[in-house]
Amino acid sequence: MLQLPPQDSIHWLIALALNAGLIAFAQRLPLLTRAGWIHAGVLGTVLWGTLGWPGWLAVVAYLVLGSLVTRLGYRGKLSRGLAEGRGGRRGPENVWGSALVGTVLAMLTPAAPPQAQGILLLGFAASFAAKLADTFGSEIGKRWGRHTVLITSLKAVEPGTEGAVSLEGTAASLAGSALMTLMMLGLGLVSGWRAGLLVIAVGLVATLLESLIGATLQWRWLWLSNELVNGLQTLLAAALAMLPVALGLLPFS
Image 1 (cartoon, rainbow, N blue to C red):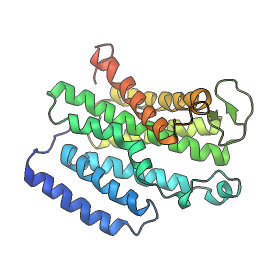
Image 2 (image 1 turned 120 degrees about the vertical axis):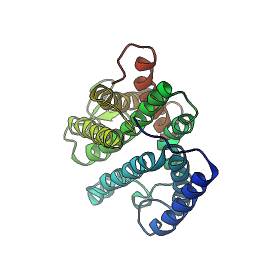
Image 3 (image 1 turned 180 degrees about the horizontal axis):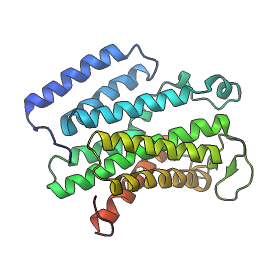
């Protein structure tokens, strides 16, 4: 079980100072826009303040891995009009679309009773496992998916179509979810192999549900942006991980 840091002003001032210094240095890296780095600094401060360095490091690892996989085959995706804009740099909307649910769960954790803390951390881990699964599946599927089909009808569609899936992309999603979960296990944010398997599974399931939302709702409701769908995906992942444990349907570890 993760040992949470003390919730005092000194700890939060250290969190703020460390993240301000790190962001000032990291802005040279082509991962985020300038505004994206500022919001990442806020996110990092909150995570270090609430969960300590393990929670902070887990999300930094997510950011780095997600950015790296976005750049895989970037020229090929760019030539086909499938690449992320801004050279793959993510902005504030991407930061919070991916991390808002996890951040809220992190903020709730220190004030919760011990048993509830474990459940909240399970949801935190699942939200980021789902997002890395989504990033892996989307970026690898767009570049190397050989047979892309619409999840609702299994009819062949162009790569990058909302709701499109492929075997290669789905396998990459599973790998992304498993990789993020292994990091969460190693950092003590997830405890036990049962909890780990649950997080891996819901990371993949939430990614497939996101594709279903894209195929059935996103093209109808223009206000349903990619960032809102990302937030909905992470919320579904957190709920799918926490509810069975909270209701006593699955053992915690």
